[in-house]
Image (cartoon, rainbow, N blue to C red; front, side, top):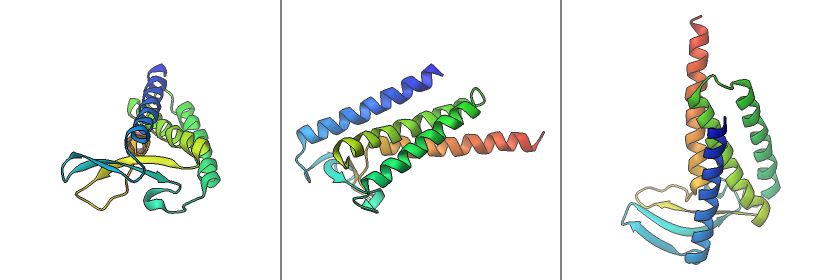
Length: 152
């Protein structure tokens, strides 16, 4: 279980460091191309969710995040040792939730910086990537675990 805690801590650290560096080096609203026409780094503040929906609902998101964290910790306990993919997915969800929760509680908004220039997609951060990958891994692992149970 310690490896999943280390994964979580490393991702939260990388997320917070990347946000610090963006705030330090790119002015608010500024943009720095990384791979032309593919990927750029920008500095925005998002007080909502994806596409800034429910903007300004700081405490709503904080409460929902705490509930999600409790749910993830429950799943860790419930499925302990049953699937490395599930444990990794849960660690990624936990890391993403914590990374964005830190911003919301501390600042009232989340710093987003990764922009895909070739598609109209919300600007996101490392915590967001961790959440999406973690949710995908968790769904796959739970589906596989349930599938195995159905064949018994």
